[in-house]
Amino acid sequence: MFRRKLGLLLVALILIAITSSAYASNSDKSATFKSSLISTYGIHLNKEQLPNSPEIVYGEKKQVQGLDVVDFTFPSFDGKKIPGEVIYPKGFKATNKYPTLMVFSGHGEMEELISKPESYQHAGAVGLAQNGYLVYSMENRGMGKLASMGDHLVLEAVSRLHGGSWYGDITTDALYLSAAVNEIPYVDKQRIGTAGVSTGGALSMLVGAIDDRVSATYVQGYLGTYAKTFADGTHDICNNISGILNVGEMWDVGNLIAPRKALYVNGEMDHFHIADAQVSYAKIKDHYTQLGAGGNVSLLSPRGVTHEFSTQVATDFFNKSF
Image (tube, rainbow, N blue to C red; front, side, top):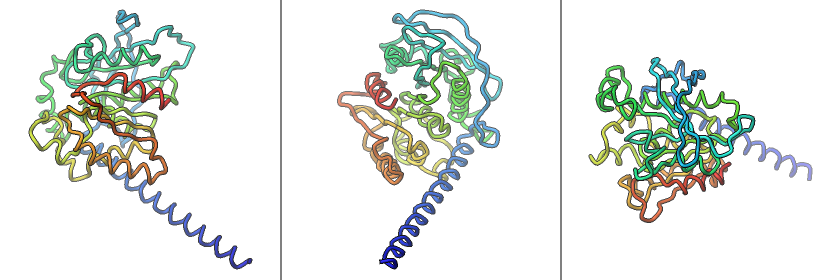
């Protein structure tokens, strides 16, 4: 009996050792890929460390659909002041803690997330705030209030001179915003999420992958594969990150978010085709399952939905996640 128990104990210890070794190996692989991702995109981080919180300067206040919306700016890696807007939920009190979302803009202008429900972004930031969330958005370089910087593809070409990319620059801006949000006293640090469609979806995914303080990530109209989705000539060439396929695929980015909660949405009629998304999602789902967190990630393809932000789908996801 003693020998049998001893044998079972040895088997258990061996299994634990194998599992621990595999987990360590996966962790090392993830760390290596994250480092390569930051370098390949040209994300401006000092020794890959997340930035210190920049100072947010608040400006004018307006009302949108009965909610207070306040302009702000914050300095980014190069000193550029990035404009943003914060939408406060109804009945906001600075003494309370609020689940907080960073909703990133796609191609277009940030105002499409605030006051333009007719746009493909459907004023999604305000829609989420109406459901009780504190919401922060920012402008992308070369668009909206930053259009004076020049077309984003010109900015992309300039960034490439330094081995970077436009996406690397705006992802850095988004990480600076995240650093600022994490220092705001009425933000619930345990309930911080990211969301967006198109470029906003890409930023949501990248920030979720790099900043593990994000607990839930909503990505719409972006998931696919670098090799196929951006090789068919139907998408803006800013998505073609130089050298990215030398270091990994889009599912590797999604794997960095695991085991935290994530929802990927590619509408039935989206030109980011669901078939491409399914390829990456299968790899992401498998990784989550290996971590024992298969229930934390999903892929949806709502019928009749094109390349647009689905506010109610996002709201339902964050309500369940938080």
